[in-house]
Image 1 (tube, rainbow, N blue to C red):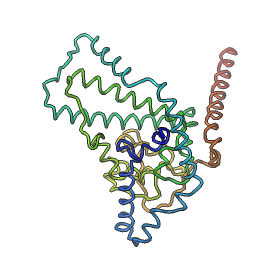
Image 2 (image 1 turned 60 degrees about the horizontal axis):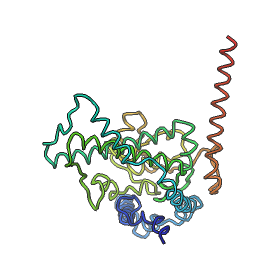
Image 3 (image 1 turned 180 degrees about the vertical axis):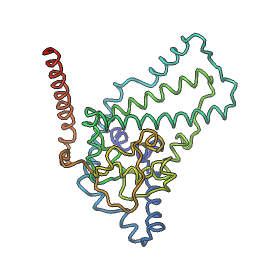
Length: 324
């Protein structure tokens, strides 16, 4: 029973993207979009929202299996990772040791200002580090060997966000620990004990807004786009779907999670393309079947190949240097 709760608990946790309330809202937003903007009938809209060819495709079925299996891995791996408290404690004492740095420098700041600043800072730093890690996963061959498990999805559903190799889950888990373990002690040091988040149902208010406005539609077959000016600030569902596209002009575009400004700053922003049909998945030379054994083991083989190529090139360079 505990395992069942651990596996499916995310559906009842407002802190998680697939909380059933967010899923229902995303379905409603998708349906309204299809009927009001795309001028489909209610029946046609419902048929598209609940498309069996998407939710029962081989790719989607692999998503569901990976979701369950990865929860098992998480139960055993999470206790082994460095904790938020360890990082926070180390940073807090590090700040104490810096000469001239005044503890409680802004302790008299209004509580409302501190709470708002802390909430916004946490959201922005969290979003930026997600963008940065995502970008590295596409740019570094060793990390791409892991991340392409996610991009092997040929249909997108809200559960596709969990279609990741366990090693990627570890990396994102460490990222989350680093973000919270670094922001919290800095605020406690400078602002004192009045540090807290603006929350709604226990969730960072900014994250809550992100989820209730259709975060689950990012991994879906409903390509909701924003106005061009807004897509330079926020990543639309259509922009993230474009990120999964097999079209070469879409490669390494739109790494952002909520904010598009990071992609704009780093030159990887691509606005959505209205009414363009997209194919999802990997390039033909990297594509593989939705077989679980291949999904979990192939990244290790690909990483080994990357390391072998690097070692071979290093050996060739050393031979050239010796020859000189």
